[in-house]
Length: 529
Image (cartoon, rainbow, N blue to C red):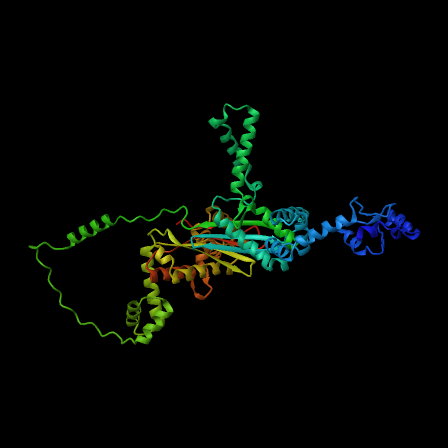
């Protein structure tokens, strides 16, 4: 019936319609009304994301601007629209994060194929991201990822606005990138462009001298070497790694897809990774040797059967110790973390004075810690602290055994130390001993030349300079800072107290601090002692 109407005499173009056809050349717009065929012509006027104008020819047949028959194109467009269900659009949107109309268009272009639609959106996203690549990124967030307290990652990712940086999509990207670094131990650089040229040239020299290439022509050999070097550099670059949540795309493409989704430029600025105990020798136990040594020691101490026993010295009456209540012992134990018998003894020695008992335990703790300071600490844990996503710290603290490393008290120490580093922006080193000698000499030269010391005798000037340098060095060393939770003790005293409480040697090995937008704090601080 529709075909008859389209070819009927009533569908001939009137004089007014002919004028509109002429205007089409200028305005590209035409409205044709054909009695009895409005539905077919209306459905044929739109094809996915493109206007197709219906124009009657001299025989009255309505055709599209691309030459297709109106009725057939209407059927095709109706079938395509019917094939793309809202459920399919929603699924593609959930998987890609793209807009609803973009997903619908991608499915139409790919004939309803989800994989092809994702590829279509990916290509569109990459083109959109490239346009934004030159825009400044001054905001962002710092993230961290700790795996089983043995691998730690700190990362900074930048965007354009604070609004985007606090959104869930950007936060998820930062978390995923931190996890990606932890999962790729071979990664050392952000991109292949960051690899030093010296390292690239050295790799090239090694590859060119390999035996399997010596028989190849120079041109072919050069191409093979270029391919091998590219593969090697890709292995070292974070942005070239297969994305851990979808290995069909690499990290840089995932970043660009996120750029297309949120509409802002994104830059992965820097990262650092700690592996627990890397570079330290692991403690090995030789139980047979220990038992033999203890047996030998006992045989030396034990008297022989015929040997005379030493005279027994009569006990001398000592003054009675002050009575110590259980409540006082409990209070001292909660405040110091020391053992119950140690607390009881401290209170007895100080006649029940809590302050003196704490000082007694502290001195005892320091003495005990000094004895343990030479023991190897190759276990422990890596911790992190992020303040408002703008300041981040990654820290490694070592102890002797994995058992202590997983304990709550040791975990609390690591968390407190990470928070301490965040609270002390001037801190750059673990201890004074870690400060390079060149810096100390330079500081001393500057102090010696100050005008207020020129009139002083040489020996007096030396003492004043030593005092000033000691104060200055203490300001940049973590262990010399007043503890943020109790400023009556220093951080090094807190560590010593924990050593006494846990009975193992503890070393603050290294830390790194990131401040959003600041590149001056990327240097890793390490204490190998």
